[in-house]
Image (cartoon, rainbow, N blue to C red; front, side, top):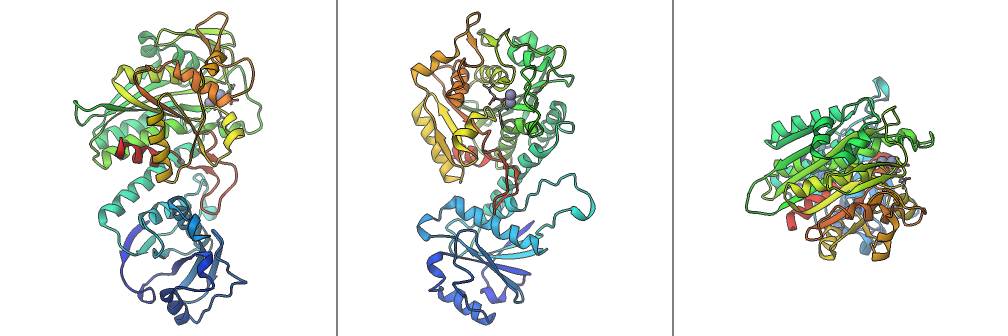
Length: 476
Ligand code: BES
Ligand code: ZN
Ligand code: ZN
């Protein structure tokens, strides 16, 4: 998608379709510029046909065609909706096979979100479709308004990262193995001059990462603990990002029901986001130090798999009773969190499709956030709000820490009762955080994947998280 800007009046712009966003309040009293333009197209809005409701569309068959898109009530319009509106417009126009689109940014305080929204709207998960089923694509986006080349480039980079995450998450697990994830990371490291270390299973065991290696045992695919480093100033603190990278989660011996099991290819979304993020930071030449650690493995019930009740010794030295092998995320992540701290990270965010419980609590509308320091949690929530990714904090009370007692080991990987499932996951992870460090856990199991399509996004992978991380690093 080629992006350009123009300051020409609407009627002078050459394109196949022009998008005009309108608030509900504006349908009856249309702003002068829009009104005179529509008059030139011989069109007047009939409020019975177009009311300006959020994501409502009305396509006028003029030349070029004009798409009115509702932006809802003025007072509710924020950056998140602004981005989504662009996505909804593009998705509507793609249905009409339109290739070149101009977008009136009159109501946008940050017109660059049009680029992100349009590109996000355009993504389609039919990556293995051949021939006539191939989705139509927008080739040219013209933004009517002011944007610097730098702003355009940055938004395009953010967009590419988001859709890269989505394409990786969409890849089926037979195509996206831990080894392929590593190959992707190596390519990125080469291109953006990142330091890379790939720790294989044998080496992981040798170094004491037996929790990670334990989960890896059930699969025939080789597993890796991936480390990527972007170090710009040795004197500055290091920001650590840890991403869950289970390329397929069958549940292991505690096997999942087969209904919807195919969706468990999404379980590497955290790792994909962490890799996309460090690449984006290098691409944008940011001045902060970042280390990414991603445990990459399948969770399968092979003959060597961990069995419920098995005990493993983690890199931190704590012993873990694996009561449920389907709570594998926390088991691989604990070694990754220990490692990232050993490598010097003092502010850490982990992203993980960790629990089904988060879907029960928040659906796909917000990421659950938990942490050990309120000021850092607040900063992540704020970064999320500013980048259109909603976060909802859940508490970790001292009483919650009682949940994971084990009769035989230092801690169990699940609680005896089903309650507070999201918190239980975070409580486990917090056991591996040095209290001096700041840590936030993002449970993205609900937000990384959409079960049904939205007006602004296809169903499937969403690419959540990378925009929040970027905002965060810009103000850390
Ligand atoms: N990968 C799943 C969580 C998940 C569920 C992600 C649905 C996306 C959609 C995770 O490994 C898991 O299976 N968690 C268990 C934990 C339980 C055994 C304590 C769960 O949520 O059932
Ligand atoms: Zn699981
Ligand atoms: Zn999982």
